[in-house]
Image (cartoon, helix red, strand yellow):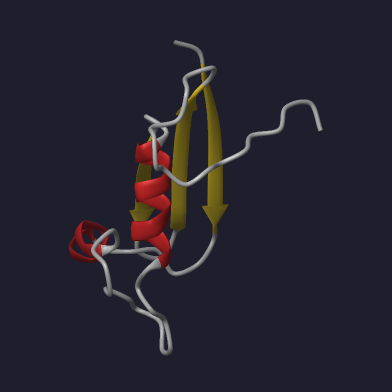
Length: 88
């Protein structure tokens, strides 16, 4: 199936392997005042739409998150709605 990919890239401090393994666990956070729910919620939404989210990160070099969503596939019943606008 054709897919749409979104890359989110930052030039922050990056993450080591141990941190990368934990970032999709609910309530895990490295930020003061963070809830640790953002990435687990994002993954649940993406997977609810038959997509995937991957991360590549190196300490001192930043992180890249890649979200891949199939085009034209109906959402799973009860999954949160995600609208993808093309050509805008």
